[in-house]
Amino acid sequence: VQLQASGGGLVQAGGSLRLSCAASGRTFSGQATGWFLQSPGKDREFVAAIGTFTYYADSVKGRFTISRDNAKNTVYLQMNSLKPEDTAVYYCAARASAIPVVVARGYDYWGQGTQVTVSS
Image (tube, rainbow, N blue to C red):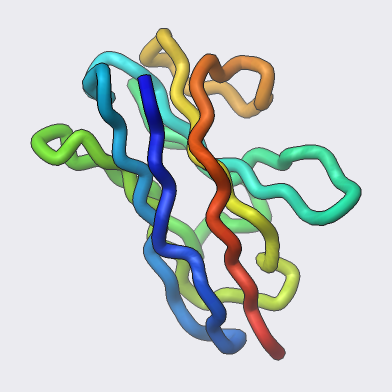
């Protein structure tokens, strides 16, 4: 499975971005997909995941929405009410199981990151 993340950019606080994660080589329909962020010098942190259910980190609940378009084999992360502390490189990941997990080591495939920068 190859994952291609896109949609990052520079936005002012309070603004919105939509990240996309397109898969090739295998469909998403039977796999859980997650988004993680990584700031310089820190480990990757869980943001959201979708599979048999959706799950969000407390820090993004009510602001971010993860969704999936099986026809396009793409998972999205709609990010609203962005804050400067959301600034990071965002990665999408997929795992063989349809059950989403919150730990990075639980994912088998990773896309390249996309930079999100939120200015104050």
